[in-house]
Amino acid sequence: MFYRKKRALVAVSILSLAVAVLFAGCQKVEEKVAYVVGMEEYVYGYPLVMMDVTREVTTAAVNSGEYSPPINQFARIRTYVNPDFKNVVRISVNSLWSFRFVDLDSEPMIISMPDMGNRYIVMQAVNM
Image (cartoon, rainbow, N blue to C red; front, side):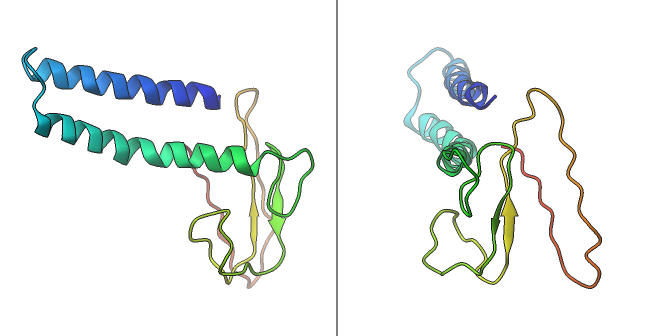
């Protein structure tokens, strides 16, 4: 699944360059057009690449640890993190975290949460 996304990112980059060449009328691509295309690729591609690198680093574990669960397993950060924590960019230092990366290629997954009573909880799903 993740390798298909990398290939798709490369295909989008090549396609955007091809479109830039076509819009330039098969003439030499002007520097401004190339700059804009490069910036668009960076803006849309960089977050995907960083998320994939984060996934690879985070899930490179055989057993679930506090900061590194394998694919489809939860990790729980049971204490407040130190401000020097760098596994995730800008993690909240005053919250407790549970997280996982899921692979939905084979089947969907259901995530349920118990009634939290008066406590505050955030459930976030991010699609790369």
